[in-house]
Length: 360
Image (tube, rainbow, N blue to C red):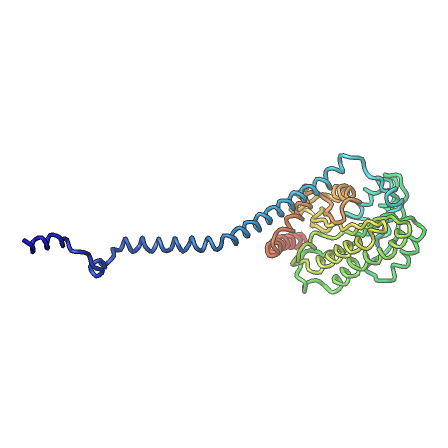
């Protein structure tokens, strides 16, 4: 009996450590691995929480900054190109002076800009190399707008000797506005080695030297009177490196930087310096019949462009001068350089093909 009681008391037998070590099933092992990974993730997330918050703050700051920039750009677009058309026009004679000098004034933007200034009552000095065309344009402006006109025949590709006669012709005039418009363009977009040496020298002498020396001639008088405006017409091709227009776009980049530096130097002396950066305008520089001429809202006529550009005078130190060009300029600023180069190559190849087909 004692043996039976003992046996009943010890039944069932206690589990030993050895008996409890049975192998886990595959499901249990997988769940254990998941639990371990989740615990590890929670520990990493807890330790990296401060870094994630910092990254969120950086992202919020970047988004806010870009949003503010877009809003400011939109406001500038409205302020420059739409508000001036709703208010009375500025008195440019009172603001700057009675005479305006326009180089490259017989065609395109130069002639249209001269006519727009004349419509506001300014007397105009026209500078170009073709005397017959100068006389015709001067007479047309004088008869149409009832202002005084004067002409100076000068070939800016001839070098330094032309500037003494220009200085002499302008010395007794109250020059209030100088418009540096004269420029030499490629006959059509070309690779650099295909451009002749004569054309390269003309680009340097006309696009760069002419603007610099014309400013050097008229600026002392403006500083003495403590008022005046210098408008230098650059090009949208200066925004980023533009293949197939290498020398031309580089010369226009010089004009843009030159104008911006002058503004910092002479703004305190009452001089307003504007860098005007047009994109394509329907001038002789673009092939007649080109597809560009079929988009007037994108490629305005010189007259339309000049009307808008003159309204920005005294308001913006650096502008495209036309509302759709300002939109193009914003896209150019924000796009990566490789995308600009890709688009420029496509456009310039198309323009070269059109120009060569017209010659054939």
